[in-house]
Image (cartoon, rainbow, N blue to C red; front, side):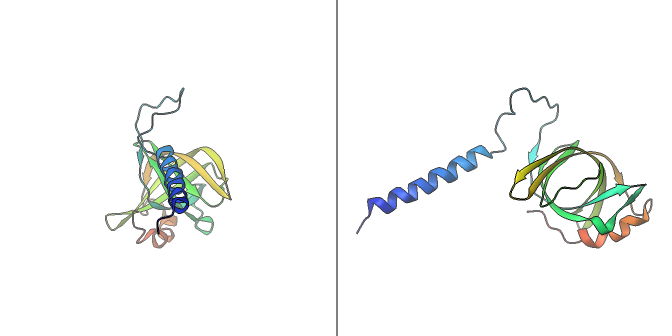
Length: 147
């Protein structure tokens, strides 16, 4: 027998999910007053973040995170605890190879529930031949597949 009550509950769930999808759509217009010369792409990659202090990565303080937005200048990452460092090494696995980028933290935003969002402006690519501390980060990035 058909139940109008259960159908209404399903429609309520669908309505809420549609609102959540629409609110997080990568095609939304930027908030008023936000000036960016570069567009952002909503892409999710698992990353390794490590504080960069005195020209070396602090591997013992490395954490994993997920990218939220990517642009040609930087990215936004989501992570489960804030990182206080002003500069970070961002490690990612792309085309069966580890890549490391140096970035400056531009904003830290608490999202609630213990999660944080970091805006990172990337300035240069780092190699393990230049900086030996990156050799210890490579195993942490190895095999991280794009979502």
